[in-house]
Amino acid sequence: MRYCLLLLVLASSLGLTILLAGCSGWLGSVDGTGLGGAPGGDGQGGGVSGDREPPAISNVAASPVSVRFTGGTVALSAEVTDAGGVAAVWADVTAPDGASTSQPMSPAFGAAYAGEWTAPPNTGESGAPLTFTLLVRARDQAGNTSAAEAVTITVQAPGLPPAGPPPLQ
Image (cartoon, rainbow, N blue to C red; front, side, top):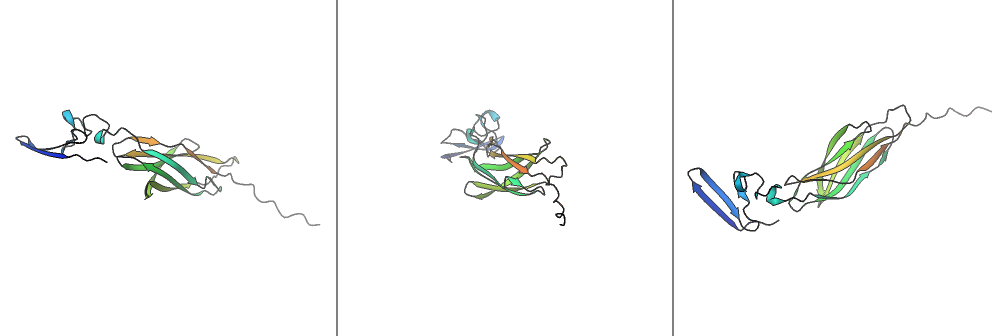
């Protein structure tokens, strides 16, 4: 991350204004506006310091990808990087009926983020497994967002009840 080299303090009848100049041009003032009073730092839009690059998400994993019909905990992990800093990482979970929820992920170590999601039990009587889609998303400090490829989690169908004892002979 680059920092500016010059701090300029101006006092006027309207108040105190602090402007930063240097490496990346005018960055803004203490009131959060950029050039021309536009929010966003450098007057070019795109949030902090003109950052328009979304976070990079890689190595997305879920374990296990198939759980028993009783449901269970699924561990989520991903590596997320961004030159301007990562603000948030989460997984959007979409159920077979289209309902969606978000599961936050926390920094683990280095660029790794981790979280857990609890798969619900498969109480359906159809005998079919339930398939959930997990999509890891990230937002950087400038507000840029990205999404990784989806991961599919299957909740197995309830099995048939065990057969009775063999007939006596």
